[in-house]
Amino acid sequence: MKTNPFKDFAKETSDGVYHALKWDVDLPDSFINDLIEEAKLSNYRKARFCLHPDPSQLLQFTYLAFVSPYKDRIHSHPHRPEIIYPIFGSALHSTFDSKSNLLKSTTLTSEQPIALGTPFGNWHSIEVKSEVFVMLEIGSGPFIKTSTIYL
Image (cartoon, rainbow, N blue to C red; front, side, top):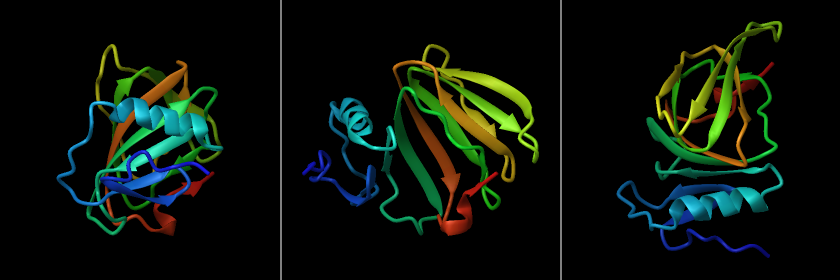
């Protein structure tokens, strides 16, 4: 049975998804490496650590780690925009029209850590290009079942 490496300051709310116990949690120096290791153990090839203690919070601030090969299904957030910021590695962020036609691709890399905004309702996906990719995702809440829809 896998153990929660964040047990002192977070709870696991589903497989590979952790929520901080409080907003002002002190993350250890090993945090990014621990999150990457969680992604390697996950069947989904990703792990998520939410600094917001609860999905109902109005501000959603999440660290995500992905392990290659990984590519999101094309999806959209109809009720909220999101901002992503690369921390480690590289990935391709692509936007699509409603018929899955590629509109634009942008490389996200920790070597040039530029934040990227995705307006609500835009179809998009992430494809990991390096061995691992870690990013921050900032969006508005609350997170509900209809916060993400798939094309």
